[in-house]
Amino acid sequence: MDTETKIDLIRRPPTEEVLTMDNLRQILETEEHPIAYNGWEPSGLVHLGTGVICAYKMKDFVEAGTRFKAYLSTWHAWLNNKLGGNLELIRTAADLFKHSWIALGVPEDKVEFIYSDKLYNNLSYWAKTIMTAKNLTIARTRRTLEIAGRKETEAHYVSDFLYTPMQVADIFHMEVKICQLGMDQRKGNVVARELGEKLGFWKPVCVHHHLLQGLEKPAVWPIPEGKEKEAVASAKMSKSKPETCVFIYDSPQEIKQKITKAFCPEKTIEFNPILDICKHIIFRENETFTVNRPAKYGGTAEYQSFQELKTAYKRGDLHPQDLKNALADELAVILEPVRRYFENIREARECLNAIKNAETTR
Image (tube, rainbow, N blue to C red; front, side, top):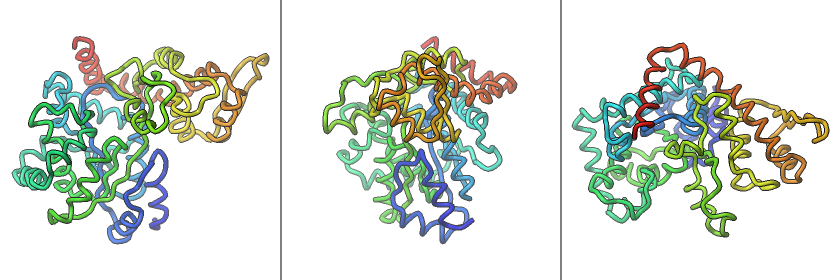
């Protein structure tokens, strides 16, 4: 496969940013199978963002010929006190994440799944963590707390400041040349780029993907001018707000209920979570999006691109409820293989039930 084809796959949506294109091209021209990775805190159920969006990029990177490492950072989840700080339960969540991506079509034989316990038994990993910490000020580290889902004012323990040095050490210890994470992890990746060569390593390429918007109305609406960036960060789909996200295991009825209640202002494109899902999932899966509706409301409509759908919605040619109904139906079809996988694979089903029970009793 030629370099430009590989670049097209890596840049394929939902990719939003590459730091930098020149660096990416250089790596692809000098290494046949560079190591790429994404990392997650395994801390609960998997929603459309963590599941479908991340699966898309894993498959893109595998097709582009990279050696992809899916890093299940159980210790980062533990540091963040996820699942009550129960490390055994966090490890079960890691197994659930792995099963979830396999159910979504990620090739198990072409992606290396790594649990952080494996890395942290190695003293040289901790040496990299200390080297990174020694080159970071408290102020600089505080500005990266977004990668742990915290605001700059929410660091209360020394462990909060370990999060970023550990994440940077992860990159160099696993010999990662391309960091493929969500936009919320950008600040941590930029630290790795800034410090890599100074620490005697390299400057990794950073490929950041889009974060799906949660289904709820933004806390402040309409979004004040100049506050768009903050609004995007605070409105991302989150498993900590289960009523505002679609989990990949949801039944068609559950999907319908959640989508029906979702924020979807008429004729409004910006910060519309229903259109966000259409753009990044529906039109990634299908070339055509069909909206079935009674003849008195315009009859069946077919859209050949997201641009066409967006234009029709902005004009008022498509009612929010008709759009929601069509989206719910499409998501139910897309997620059918996941439901079937968890029905048929006992180990996967037991992981799912364990995490569901833990979420219920917390």
